[in-house]
Length: 191
Image (tube, rainbow, N blue to C red; front, side, top):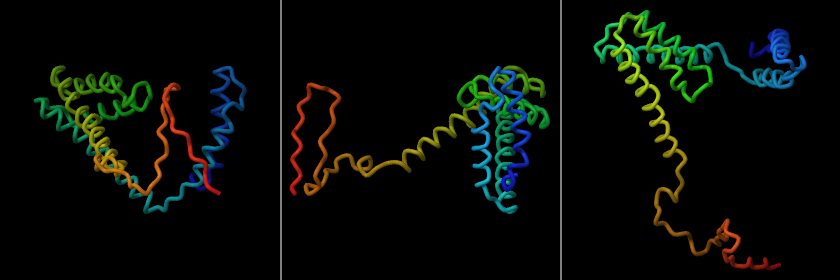
């Protein structure tokens, strides 16, 4: 589909016009954005091997996430079925995709706990497993991401706060939002 997006253009236009009729908007509202998205889709070029590799890593991520949830269940003393945990995980992921709260906060938990209870856990164990799972899979991973972000985007000034600028480099005057602040006049450039 990425090489021939025109195959889904007709379907997208029909779905968009139906959705617009429900909203009381003109049938072509959003059509330009839809076609822009299809144009972007054309720029994606993956070979079958690259596509298989991406799918493999994605599948590994899902399996590792289900394993994390299963280990959290066992850590709380619960003994749920693997199928029940997988269904609870899938339902939580599906609901978490709805952008109501960042990271699916509260929405994922509201689906995950009943799913774990239906897989054979007690309510207390399910709540504890959900808290452990969310702590590891959401908060811990986010904290690692922020640490990596700060190391990747740090500047030389951040590394050595006592570093002084070179005397040969002319510094630009500092901006102050205070209108009463005194500013040094800018020297006229020599010609």
